[in-house]
Length: 142
Image 1 (tube, rainbow, N blue to C red):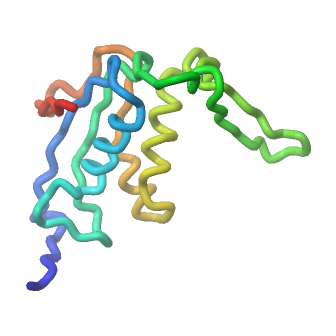
Image 2 (image 1 turned 180 degrees about the vertical axis):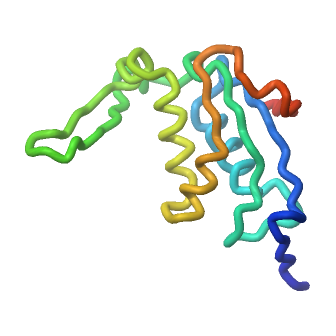
């Protein structure tokens, strides 16, 4: 069986919306990463951008189990001496409600040009409203 290489004009891209309210952080991120990469499609090719667009709403209400809300640390290096900043999950959600979800999904994507290109197709919103209603996104159930 041969691998099918589709041109950009032959690919049909769809929009999907995921409601993250009360859902585990890892499950939402894994499903979004698979859709972004295009692994849900029969014509998946690992070295091409085959994925669809993903909209995630209610990112501020995503759930984490156990004591991760107070124990899990997110680190950021500013580039200066003694510039390592650490935030717990709770503090990061207060500061930027979409950041933990975006970081988790980006960690599941490849760390190369293709991963950066695919990550641009992700739209994350803290509330339940999004400005992409004209694309008629399909609802993904977890």
